[in-house]
Image 1: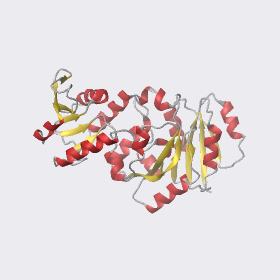
Image 2 (image 1 turned 30 degrees about the horizontal axis):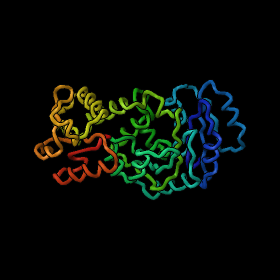
Image 3 (image 1 turned 180 degrees about the vertical axis):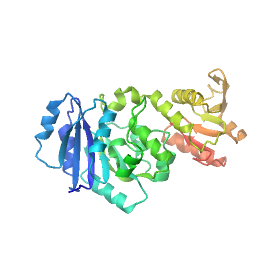
Image 4 (image 1 turned 60 degrees about the vertical axis):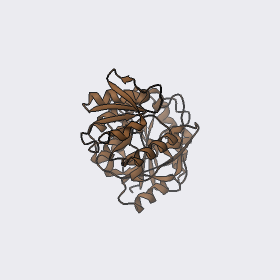
Length: 327
């Protein structure tokens, strides 16, 4: 019998929280599921540990590929359900998670994927940010700040993964690249506005250890998608509040052939300088003198973004049509 949801969980390494993660999936209030544990080659002890769990819904798959991205695709290929969810071996799912996400997708047939809010063992600006929006429009306009839906919260329609060829291997975070591809194609992605996953952050997290998840890798990926984003329409670009990340992004934007012209900053110490010995740094107030620029807004927390959004809106600029946040 075909389950309602296939949960894809790559397994490898020490996995000290594996039992807790697996238990949280098998204890879901939605019982009609399968959990695909895709075990990294060379870890038979993990396969034996999982096979000892007495639940027919747990399918242990001996992964062929050592690379995490390719093992994710192995999981997609093995999944049988019409909905595919992601889960990591160091996180914990709320018992209601899958039931709420399945209900969300049933009640929103135009949505291709539903993530959720998260809790974490580490308080951070990124957690507060990802829990501050949920609708498809908010997800789409936040796409260049960071991955707007936490990867292990994903629950999407099988066709969404099939139509776009799954995850790609490259010098970029594979989940962010796939999500940007979906959004570029106009897919509607949302979140159940409840914290349905405990997202564990630790020193061995892939997001902290892999070069594919570095700040520069993010900047390069954003620039590649911005270069193809019709919203920019070939207009000259200005960057507000660049910081180091903004300067990295500028370098990659130039490599993509985009017409970067000006920088703007609030810090009076930076006004009058030139970035890369070429691009002048102007005060924020000078934005009003350059109505033709498409503006990319760099560093800043939630409060900073609200202030800058208010300023740009007050100048008659439209978010998504005249400016985007990129950090």
